[in-house]
Amino acid sequence: MINKMAKNTIVGKSKKPGSTKATGRDYTTQKAFNKRPDQVAKRVELNAEARKRKIYGKRHSSGVDLSHTKSGSMVLEKRATNRARNGKNGKTTKK
Image (cartoon, rainbow, N blue to C red; front, side):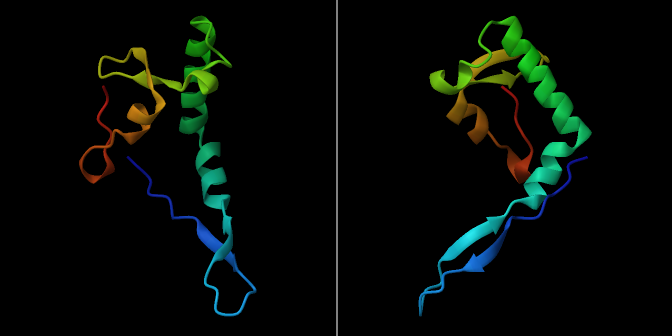
């Protein structure tokens, strides 16, 4: 079951006359999402695999993610490719 999280809401508007620019966003919904037990478990699993491959702490500078495959294993993949892969109706399509 996939929970649909609400979009982050705009907190404030610019004080300049005639401006409609947002000055900030409320990220409390994202914080709640990241605290969910399934998301915490996912991060723990990914970090453990990164430590095992000796790439923990190096993924950011190299621009790669660990991507889950349909078989359940993990592979290194470009960050942009991994995060852009979304299927129909927001369902993920694993590599």
